[in-house]
Amino acid sequence: MNKITCDKCQKQIKPQIESKHLTGGIRINYFRCNNCKEKYLIDVTDQITRQKQIELIRLRKYQSELVKASEKFNLEAIETESKDNIDRMDILLKEIKEAKAELKDRIIEVLQ
Image (cartoon, rainbow, N blue to C red; front, side, top):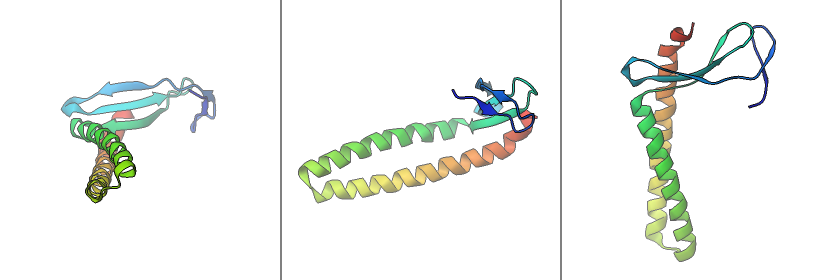
């Protein structure tokens, strides 16, 4: 991982990612400055959000397969399925982003 500059003390640091498991299945990933110990939140998820991320990965793989089949066979049914799959992925991605933002707001106090 590349070095970054700490916003608080302006020192160059090589972040070491740490994880913390909280009650309710919440997991936070963060790093702290080696010099001033300031904490920086990278990611926060709960069990539902992680399940949605897994589903999104599955749908992306499926979408790739649909695109390949559509190019090979040029079938309207595959194109329709592909469009529906894209819609499902968009919904999941939006839900994941909203859930992470809400979790981040709830969790930010834990790091301080």
